[in-house]
Amino acid sequence: MEDPSMNTCNKEVKKGTTAKSGNKNAKLLRLVEERALSMEKKKKQHGSLVPFVPQDCISNILVRLPLDSLQKSRFVCKPWYTIINSPLFIDAHLGRSESVLIFLSSSKRESLYPFPMESIPPEKPNTISVEEKCLQTECTPVFGLLNISPNLKSYIQCLEINGGKSKIREYNISCLGSIRATCNGLILLDNKLKKGLIVMNPVTRKLTALPLGTLFSPHNESYGIALNSATGEYKVIHLFRDELGFIGCEILILGTKLWRGANGPSFGHVSWFGYMPVSAIGALHWIPHVDRSDYIVSMDVNEEKFHTTPLPKSCRTHDRVVEMGGFLSFVTHEGVKQIDIWVLKGLSESWTKQYCITKGCKMDMVPLFSLRIKGDMIFKRDKDGSLYAYDFQRQVMAKVEMEKGCFPLSCLFLPHVNSLVSWSNRERGQDA
Image (tube, rainbow, N blue to C red; front, side, top):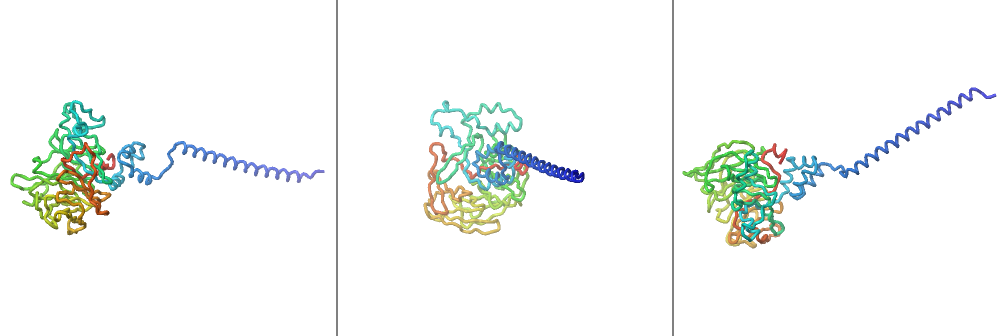
């Protein structure tokens, strides 16, 4: 006879075994499903061809791109647009950008095309007019501008110097006025259609017309742009000399609509506005006389106060003050074949003689600017307009190889830097 209790026990064992087997199958099924989901996710990631890269890495890559590529990269995707337009990125890009010389070429076409004006090819399709763009921002008709003669136009260009050679960079921008000042990539232009001035970044092509200030003839006034590092604001400083010789001063913060008066230099301290002011160590600096200046006149950008700083020796015709490595330097000729460079690191400090150049010097070499990254000092000879670069590390003065046929030797050159900077913190953060 079969024991009923044994049958019951066997049934319970079989039931437990079946339950365990079912649990294992459920776990295996869940693992298979999870693996399948994981594989599907990886396929989608590989299919998108955009692997995840930390934002800091993207920023470090973008900031090293050439300017033309960087301008195009902002439209690749929204994250890149946000990175490139951020104030931190704009400042980082400015810190890595090399100095150039900006100038106006009124004979661009004649130099490039040595044949009559009637046969000159038309402007490039992407060439813009500063005046037309300015009127468009004011919602003003621009039909009258279409009749402006090409002979009246100047073309904004810059000269890059690298490895002893020069290269002309085209902004494809035309204008009718002169460049009055530069700072961190911004330029101050005459507004020839309306009385006043225009501030523009030739790289981004953003511009704004400034309100009308005090009007004086160009030889009786001087303009400068400087950054107030304490507030992040850019200031336009305007000095003007009246008939009695008194120097007036007015200041405009870019992004605002009102000039305001300020106390100018003391009477007799400035007699000439032939040299452009230099921005360095938190101030604008003027050489006040055409020859034999024993001091410079400086205006603290933050406090907006003027004072004089004695020079280590009298400034002669071919001597200049220039910005060099963030400091103010006084470049002076000592005899016929020696150039000394003195450095001022603060308004309350004293000049220190830092370099003595004895190789390749000429008496008519005028210092123009110092390369921000490489550090070379660039000179221009009065005799023929040729440029020379002095390499401080190698202690070599070498003539810069110039592009032939398209370089005007007689025009006014101003130190400049190609940047993405705009004129207010708000605009710099949103659409600089």
